[in-house]
Amino acid sequence: MFTRIFLLVTVLIALWSAPADAQQAKRQFIRDAEVENTIRDFCTPIFQVAGLDPQAVRILLLNDPTLNAYVAGGQNIFIHTGLIMRSENPGQLIGVIAHESGHIVGGHLIRLNDAVANASTEAILAMLLGAAAGAVSGNGQAGAGVMMGGQEMAMRNLLAFSRSQEQQADQMAMRFLDDTHWSARGMLEFFNILGDQELLVSSRQDPYVRTHPLTRDRVAFVREHVEKSPYSDRPWPADWVERHRRIKVKLQAFLDPPSKTLMRFKEDDPSLEARYARSIAYYRKPDLPAALRLIDGLLAERPQDPYFWELKGQMLFENGHPRDAVEPYRKAVEYLPNSALLRIGLGQAEIESDDATLLSDAAANLTIAVRLEPEDAFGWQQLAIAFGRDGNEGMASYALAEYFLLAGKLPEANYHANKAEQALGHKGPIWLRLQDIKAQAAEVKAIQDRDRSPW
Image (cartoon, rainbow, N blue to C red; front, side, top):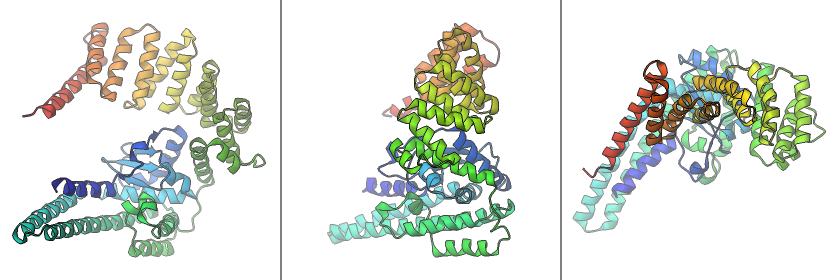
C-alpha cells in the first residue's frame, strides 16, 4: 500500500506541473530561432512588469500536439507546440504566458511542496487508519474503504489548493496585461476553448484542462475584467499578428506530413505564410528545386529576414549541399548575430563544407554560440569537431569535456579535462573552467557512488 499511496502523490504532482501520460516518453524538445524569439518578444514586456528578469526565464518548446503550458523547475515555462498551433491570435498565447508568469511570481511551485507534504500526510494517515480498521474488524474490505476515502480526501485538498493558485495566477495575469496596456480578451477566448474541452471525457481532454482546473468563478472574473478594462479592444500590432501566423504555419509545416501541408496551403494562395509553409513542405518531401523557388521568392521580398536565410541554408545543408549552405547561413547570422542557433547552423555548414580554410571561422562562430548558450551540448560537440579538424587538440579536448559533462558522461568529461589541461597549461580562464569541470564530475560521481552503496 505504501507504493500505491506514494504513487498517488506522484500523480498529483504530475497533474499540477508536468503531465504524466502515455505521450510523455515520446515528447521531444524543439529548438527553432524564429519560434523562440517570437515568443520571447511577446513575453518580455509581461516579464518586466511582473518584476522578472526576462533573461532568467527559460521558454522551452515541447513537441506535443496537445494544448498545454506549465511552469516547472523554477523559472521555466514549458509550452506545447499544440498550444501555439491552436492559438488564433497573439493575445491567446500571451494570455497563457501571463498566467504562467503569475505562478512564478506567486511562488506557487514552492507552496506546492507544502501542499503535497500535507496531502502525503493525509494519505499515510488514511493507510494507517485503514490497516487498523482491517485488523480490528477482520474485514479487509473495511480497511480498503477507509484507505480509498483518505486518498480521495488528500486529492480533493490538493486540487482545491491548485484551484486557489489558478485564481491567484489569473488575477496577476490581468494586472500584468493592464500594466502593459494589452488586452486580456485573448485569455477569455482561450478559456472558451477550454470550456469546450471540459465537456469531453478526461482521457480525451487536453492536459491544460486537467493541470489548470477551470471554474465558473475564474471565467467570470476574466470576463468581468475584459468588460471593464480600457485596453480590451486595443488591437495587436500588425507585425505581431504576422509573426504569430508565421510561427504557427512553420510548426505545422515541420510537424505535419508534407501532403497535409500542401492540402492546407494551396498553390493559388499567394500569402506570405502560405508560401512559407509550402516551401517547408517541398523541402521535406524532398523536392529541393520547388522549395528553393519558393524561399528565393520570399527572400526577394524580404532580403533581410534572417529566418528565410536560415531556412534556405537548412534546405541546402540537409539535402547534401553544405558548401552552398554556408552563404545563406552567413546572411542569417549577419541579420541576427546574437542567435546561438543560427551560429551553430553556420558553424556546422562550414565544418561539413570540406573547406579547411573555413574551420577557424567555424570555431569562432561556435565559440560565440556556446558563450550565448553554454548549456547547448550540440554546440560544444560541433566546436570540438571544428577545433579537432583545425589541429587544435587542446581546445578540442576542452570542448569535449564541456560536452560530456552536459551529456552526463562523467569519466569522459574528466578524461578530456585532464587532456586539455596538459595541452593548454595551468593558467588562464580555461584552466580555471577545467578545474570546475573536474570538480563537478567528481562531486556527481561521489553522489552516485553513495546512492549505490547498500549502507
